[in-house]
Image (tube, rainbow, N blue to C red; front, side, top):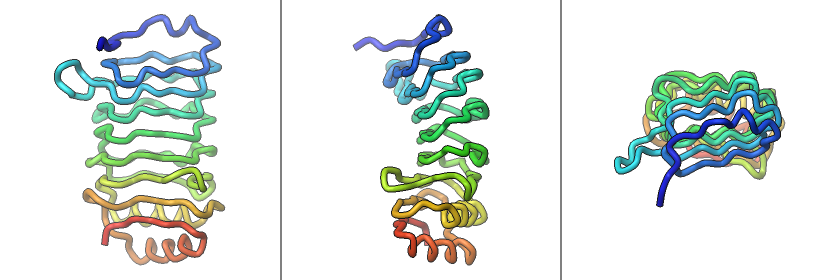
Amino acid sequence: MSVITSIIGLQNLTNLTNFQADWNGLQSVNLSNLPNLINVDISDQSLSGTGSKSLTSVNLSGSTAIEELRLDDSDFSAGIPDISNLEALNVLDLDQCSIIGSIDLSSFSSLERIDVNSNSGLTEVIISSSQPIGGDEWEVLFGNCALTQTAVDNILVALSENEITNSYVDLSGGDNSAPGTVGLAALAVLDGKGWTYDINS
């Protein structure tokens, strides 16, 4: 089975709404200035014959209508792509992307689903209580990272203060810290709102 290693000329497809090229060998993808693009899936890119993650760069500038962005199993150890202009973003999948340090997702007012599982160098994910994160259809996944106790507590507080009920959050595994006093109090609130969760103890 052959895989795609390069794509050019996408900027000519100005009416493109969905772009799916998962399970190939892409290293860099330019999806800039596509005003009608809504769904993007370029996950699971790997170098042929090695199994090593190949995707390191994605240009999304000017494509502000994107709602679902799936980039899991990429190599973003040098930093995640600039997604700051994705004003409509509601699903973000950055599972197993070698992310290091802190990422701030608090500005995405429509964000409902987050998956950053298995980024062993990820120490903080910043979210806001005003975001509609979670819900019956979504899991909220921060498992197998290296979140500090403050980061874990802040996530739990933000989730407990939003209006979502009956969802699930995973903060277990890896080097994630156990919740502190503040986080445990937030868990009690989430319990009352029908949430389930996995945490480290």
